[in-house]
Amino acid sequence: MESQNIAQELLEKYQIKDMDSWENVNADLIITDPPFGIRFGGKNGNYNRNVNNVVDGYVEWDVNEYAEKIDQLLRSIYYNLKEDGQALIFSGWNNSYIIHQRIKRFKDLSLRGKLYWTYNFAPACQLRPAHNVYEIFWVTKSNIWTYNRRCTTSHCQEGESNLTTLNFKRDYKKNMPKYPTRLPFELLKSLLEHFSDTNDLIFDPLAGSGMVGVVSQTLNRDFILGDLNTNGKIVFEHLLGYYLDKKPVNRKSTIYNVEA
Image (cartoon, rainbow, N blue to C red; front, side):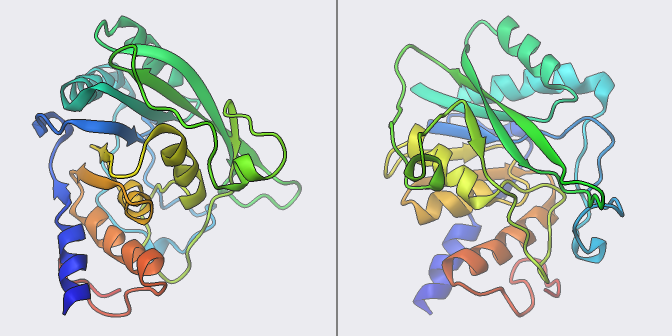
């Protein structure tokens, strides 16, 4: 019964809310991965996944509204960060220039630099390995922020650590509900250990699968998540079961009565 109560408390930290609806979260760190703006749905036949396991409801942003949406995201970041807080904003290459431009125009946040995540590309390629690069925009609200020089992942424990480039493979999960996009556990672990401390509050207003919350929980950080897609919370519940209980949730979802 106690474990069920804990699980329910964690699920309640994921709220179905628009990013504009949040006020005064007072987060130490925001990590978020905005929609791509490329008419992406996550069910392309060439991706390394069973499309029948991919949940519906992914909210994509139209390229014509992308700059406006990024402005909304930056306002949400500003109003929900502590004064010494910071944010990490992921972006694929297609519209990263828009994110860069909007951050530079947003006077209340400072762009401190960019990180690059290199990863194995999802579409199956028979002739050669395929890789891609995500940009991660690092912004702060003031001239004070948290940074820890070492993390416990392979990034710092194997060879010379280089925070400019992070090389983590995607960690695919089989026979589980999938969100169209999900950041890998070890990548988020590395970022959380570098840019936050134990008991810090981590916030993701575009939570999707809720992976930021899963990793935060394992590292003894508090977290708050938000998204417009109710199905994201189903995926979040199964990821909690996988990473915290070390097993998938082989039962009906306790949230929306959906079969696993």
